[in-house]
Image 1 (spheres, helix red, strand yellow):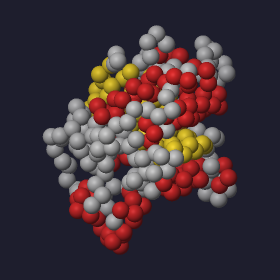
Image 2 (cartoon, rainbow, N blue to C red):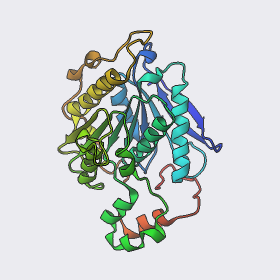
Image 3 (cartoon, helix red, strand yellow):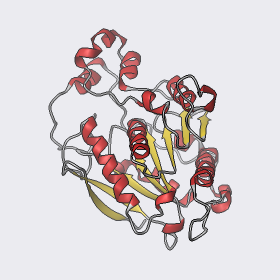
Length: 313
């Protein structure tokens, strides 16, 4: 695939790498998806996923990297990665080949938490992001500690150095949100995705949530943490395509000068297989599940050197 290799500078001067895949000849008329991956590996491991999105959604894809990952500078911290995401959004919104009214944020696992932050940032700064798509993400790191290491729960206030509190943000967002939930997620409890959707749903309006103008949930029955996009097949990509179309109709100004609209017919859904080719489940590493592994990551206060392309936050 043709791509642009980009370096985006955050507000603190750290530069992160990204790969921009533009639709040939129609990038301004196509939606754009900013893709935030999980906490392990790098953008290279997500190329098969990005390729399917590029072809089936007829969308531009910016594969965004984090500081300390891949060819990016610096070392990963929560504050730093938030700054990286904000810089990426500014880059996309000012790109001459991208329609800023058709920009969507996508995040899987940790990337979902990054996506929630960026969506909140966009609304607070009146940046017209068209919608948020999250897959197999969590309520917060604190809630994940309760699941993976309940014996550390009484000590969380002493050891936990990162938060990623998506639960708080989900209840406030007004933009359209699509939740893609793998029912057999082996890492993040499926119930956490269901709860995030409830927080966005209009049924909860008046009791602390439900502000999203268009909140949808798509459950993939056999979906695992990293492979839901493969196990979901045609339905998975159809749900994203239809969400993008509906969100643009909700958000887009009818006086848009070019009059272009994304329709459900832009993608030939028959071309999407029911089940995508399998990938070894170990091809993308997971977050550490052991006490020593996660405690070490959660309590680390020093910046680590970027000496490997596979990092754990």
